[in-house]
Image 1: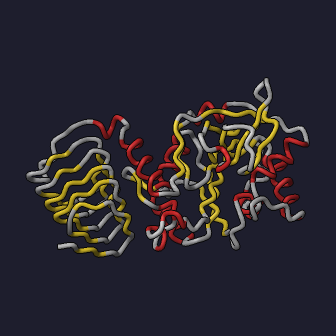
Image 2: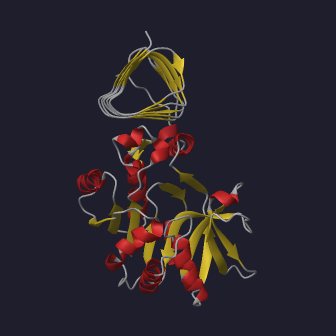
Length: 333
């Protein structure tokens, strides 16, 4: 089965980090968002990928080819960027003839779900989760038998609280390709974009049977708050919870769960809980909790909580909640 991952978005809600990196390459829990996605799919046996790229797309292609050289990867450019439906329409010739179905997973979404079970479920399956603010999401309505009767994008008056989480198993890619061609040809836009939900609704109206599957956790990593939440949840996996000695970090207390990259220099500090630090970062006389720190950065004499610090950044100062991008220097001393 082939996986299609749209990763063309600008990621404006994660600025300033996305000024220099595509959203899907922002670090979280010792990896990138896209790396977590690919690792989950590869573990489920998927080796064929189509990446729909756009903003800073060359960085995504370089990352995938460098980190995952054994994948069969194709890259399609979406320009202009006019919604998820448009992204899939651009890539349609790369999946429409797949006879074993296809998987779609949005490139800023990390979900906890049994992918093997999802792939083994017959027919088209839409992953969902109950939400408290349904008008902010694409929603699914079902009948008494569990069959999907309607999908709608951010309705003004919601009739369901089951949100689409950005994971779809499509049983008949050719029919989806035709539906996407129809909404593009008919200029059928919702909220000024071509939506995948409108294409799915065409399939439902034509008799396509769809079911849903709930996910355990869903992280839409497009905002600082949700990215930090994803970082904490992912770090609370067993491999990060084990307390161990770090003799290479003198006079430092490590409170699990943490992820510390290669060749870091940490002294006279307290790190954790829920902290991810990139490679070759220097930390001195600093307390860090519930934060993501990029690679090649330097932190001195600070108390940091709920912070995201990009790569090649420098900070020296006091107690603050920060969201600073790459190549930044802040000095409060």
